[in-house]
Image 1: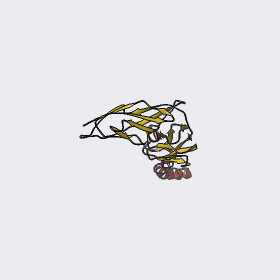
Image 2: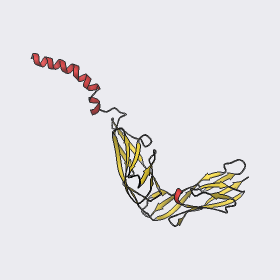
Image 3: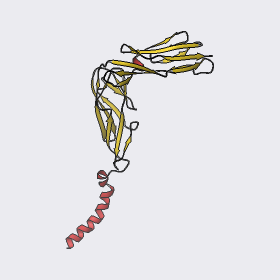
Image 4: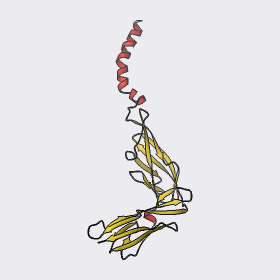
Amino acid sequence: MQRYSWLFLIALVVCPLLIFTSCGQFFPGKNTITALRVQPTNATVAPAVTQQYTATATFGDNSTGDVTSKVTWSTTPTSVASINSTGLLTGIKLGTASVRATSGSVFGSTGVTIANKQVASVTIQPLTQTLSLSLGPTTVQFTATATYRDGTTGDVSANSTWNALPSSVATISSTGLATAIAVGTATVTATAGGVTSNSATITVIQ
């Protein structure tokens, strides 16, 4: 009996220490990330096209939350696809890569395939924009979104051919930034993958 009494006393002293040290590994706090899910899973992205990724965390209390802006993003190999700190991936060349989100010792990953995809349609935004030569703004950023034959979409603003006609009223850069030149109305279009977008209108006033 005396032996068991000593064991009981030792347990009373040691167990609280274990609760505050080791037990934390088995019962993580409610704000501790225990798992990460990366989406979309196994996406296909065309070269020079971007794809937004998100990271969803599972916490110690089994709740979930968006931690896209709080994780560290990486791709392997970086020669196939790159990704920035907000989870925006850009296809670089044909091939496959791994997309990974990391928070401490916890990570989640998925695959991505960079492949040529056939463009079905292209849409640009905004549809209408008024620019003022005297009061401003004098510029507007257009974006182009491609819809592919497989039903997926992608931002093709940076690799479209942009046109603003007449160029005497407004000009537009290779990335879709339009600038007012003179009073009048101009029509903006973007072409990607051999497909021309809907038309947008810029009205320039004094």
